[in-house]
Length: 81
Image (cartoon, rainbow, N blue to C red; front, side, top):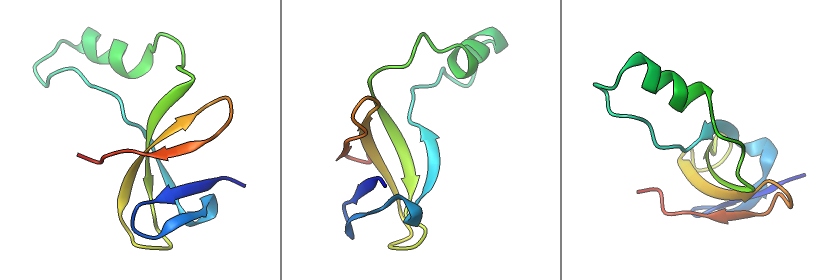
């Protein structure tokens, strides 16, 4: 069981959330198809800590950004700006 820190509701079970994917920088909209392909599909290895988006479906119904350590699965809240 993973406990995800919701800034509005406190730490909650993972079953209350829907995973929204990685929060990764994307190329500008006028970038080439090759640049988009590289950014979306060809990541240069997974980092041990990454930013993820989670939707608190069974709680405050808000999107949150968290930092998760892929080794320990520890979560830390991030500023959603």
